[in-house]
Image (cartoon, rainbow, N blue to C red):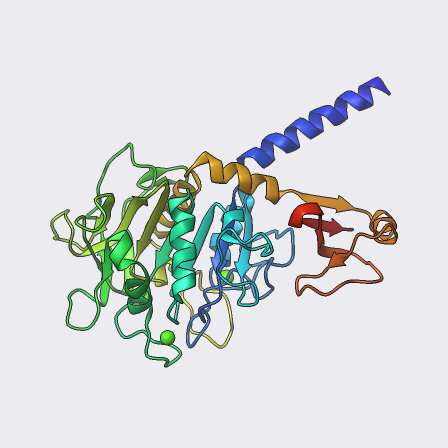
Length: 353
Ligand SMILES: [Ca+2]
Ligand SMILES: [Ca+2]
Ligand SMILES: [Ca+2]
């Protein structure tokens, strides 16, 4: 009995240790990221990809599933933000509020952000969040609303983060090629990070960024097009700080593409080309290492209570209401992922199995 208890304590400590290192990563899907020939989602089940325990990069079926799977395999949690939750910050009634996540990622947003969404993201970063913004080449308006991702991101963030993506008449705005023109700083955890050292970056029709240190003195280039000076122009990959948080990004969505996703899209496995996945994964983890304040908060909410069906049914009889992801009350309870509303508006995730 005593041995058994000891064993449980060890298991619990291991679990807690594991949780304390885990991050939560939220991929945006509120801006038509699958429009046209794009499939920039981890999976086509939302907000949590299914199966809950994938066994390979193709267990999830979006074109950026390999990215999600690598994060998952390192113990991190991956979720997709759908329009019914929306982009908010410090809104405790939204279980997918940015304050619950370590990193927020937008891959080729197709529609402009509202003022409220822009403010939410900037507040999130300045309070310690990590933001990864990825654009595509000039004139890549996939859903015909007059907005391509360079314009969407410029409109939202250029005046605060100090990053401008090249658009019509600005060169290079549709670069294809491989660059080894990299800031080779061994101390830089995006260049030389947990997933390895970045040797080269491939672009397939991507735009480049111009950095404006007059707007934000804490924005830096990491990769430039071949032959460019390592300064503020022709930047393929950049990183920076804003308030207590961090951001990074690049002007091409193609490096994220793992070649498998919606069968009606033409996808290519660029993820495993050059150092593209190394760079993207290192950057994701670097963004995760932002303010400890946000991390602590996020980790608390990364816990899911796990209940047996009988235990959940008992709680339900005692008056606790179980909601599904669309906010509908669920009765009778069966296996699945639910949310319960604890006192003081704290929403808790519950897995019933
Ligand atoms: Ca668009
Ligand atoms: Ca591209
Ligand atoms: Ca895939």
